Length: 162
View 1: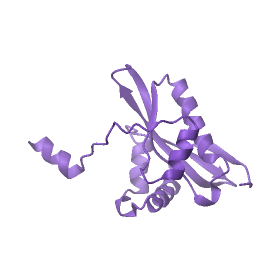
View 2 (view 1 turned 45 degrees about the vertical axis):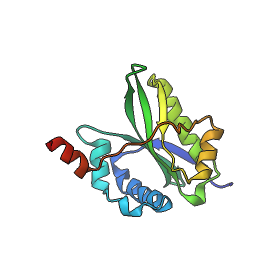
View 3 (view 1 turned 90 degrees about the horizontal axis):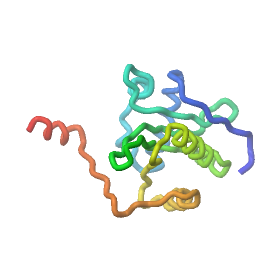
View 4 (view 1 turned 30 degrees about the vertical axis):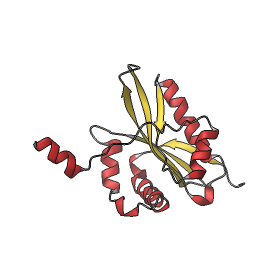
């Protein structure tokens, strides 16, 4: 795809409404809109609050956000080193094929190197064949032996109460 150049930059508090918009587009693409209940205010607290839980970068074309990556630090007890976990990466369909997704992953890989991370990880839905092919083409490996375990707030709340 040809078109205007893009730039990547760290998200700022003023970007939370745009990130929320992109999150909702991602949720629609993944057929999970019913789960996208966060708010720009919630993103602001998570990204820029007293105890930030995550970071984000934006991809812009002609001053408009067309993609984002949201990530956070993990830790490996086996390696005794931090890791970088990519929670979400999304590029609007009309801007795919311009190298934006690869540029965001390259940026995050460089950040993982800079931070001396032992791992850079993320998940992909098993039906998302185009993304799986893309991730494998840049050296990503799917780990089928690892299964995601999840508890919702109600479930971990019940566990905490005994």
